[in-house]
Length: 194
Image (cartoon, rainbow, N blue to C red; front, top):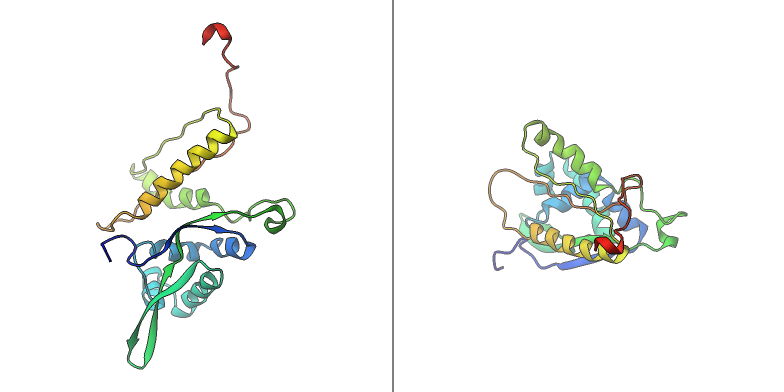
């Protein structure tokens, strides 16, 4: 490989089109496994050691991810008489593209599909230590502007994912765009003010 992260070939983006794929992402251990595999391919043994969980538990979660098409075996090696599999992600970025029929009666994502809840929980110790960097801005924009801006954020996430791994500290990076129902708004500017 050319030093890129991770050390195997994968798609840039894959749309999650089935509820089983979205549910596979709904478990914190599975999202951690996917996060670890941004760095390099790993065996179940390596993943179990990294997350401090039994191999059987990690093997179950790896199977769920593989069955959902989010992981695949990217290489193998012979260890004694056993073939050891190394797993990698199928894409750098997974995004939800459910239609109303697949998403549930109301067309919504599952309630446990919330990266901001994970980011809030993970970032609390950094906040308490004065090590949390962040910005929050509000802007009145239309749907087209929101979609365009989201594509730019997705590109930035891909750039973050591809950074070479070094140093001793793992850093989180969260981005999002969301509607705010009761945020104050100025009325549109009059023609005289433009």
